[in-house]
Image (tube, rainbow, N blue to C red; front, side, top):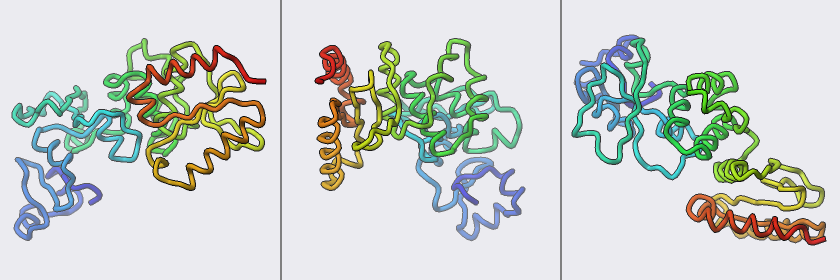
Length: 269
């Protein structure tokens, strides 16, 4: 069994005697019809106790996708869920689910397609696109699955299909690209420049944006390599602006103003 919380219907289907498993200590009963193994995650247990299913960013982040700066637990609730109010605190977000088949609503997880649809309904556009980009890049969903997720959205989300791009290599890069798009600024993604290497985003052919992830902050070799790249870019007439996760996610107005000011100044050639 891949996950840690299971419905009795699933256990029967795979030949597990729930009563015997509880007696032996291999499983414990959470509530009627639901059982947990010792390696069940905290989010799985909370979902089961609340009579919900992991979905939206909680489900996709668990699979490895980019997670927006939203630490709340996102659960899908069906008409038959009967959620327990005491388990739904301020740190729990519920999403309505139309799941009807037993194989779906008897799972502690929604499908990734449903979760992705909920992401677009729940999160700001740039964050939702970042999640979708990472899902495609990591092959958590394919193009057909993305199309199904988008087809379930209202017509106002039609623009999303044009914004999602699996070439973005980090969530912060995706967020920056979409925010620039909303400002009317087009940026090219993952551009290869002779003598410099591949650059995250390029504006107007000369302004290079490098969006650093958290993992690089304490790596002296990466720090030196980045400075070597910046110097090589400057020698070739490019201007490089380098931003951290915090610059993009927590200080965007300042970051936006820096980009606009440098772009307005024009290339130094």
